[in-house]
Length: 175
Image (cartoon, rainbow, N blue to C red; front, side, top):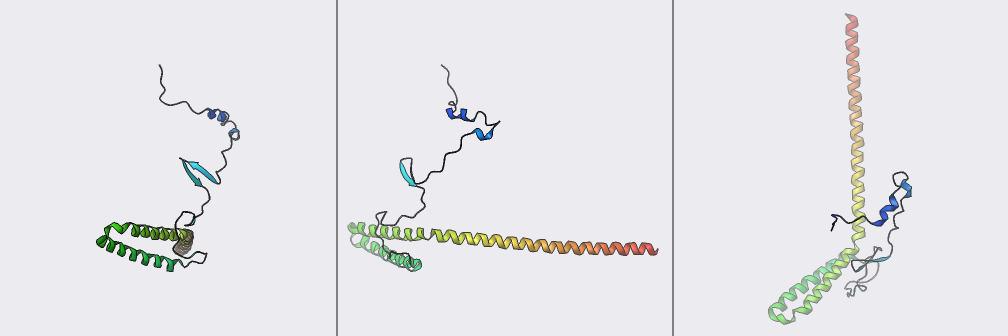
């Protein structure tokens, strides 16, 4: 009985038999996936959209709409979170059996905070990209200034050496 260390190659390797003579003979790669797909039993989508809290089955604690004051709402949720944590500590001391409701409320606040922060990600990415581009422009301007300065130094050295050669040539002529 013979055993192989490696399994045989997949059968589609035969599609590439003339690749060295004619690279265009190979089949085209498959098109990119668009829409939803299943990977390891979970559904995924290629749409890069942040689902709303309602779609996730979570109650939204801040106002709805496009004109949200993120700073104000994040501060408000943070204060509310601090209050609920203090209340949880109080309940754990006085009535330990009633902590579950407070934990659920804290979890809801954290989910809302997390969603607000995730909705700021596109703005953060844009600001980061702007910062990177500004740094690149600054570095390139510095490189151009450095090249100009070195060019002026080189021209001054050439001029100086030319003058010293002319002085040496003139002094040799006089002798």
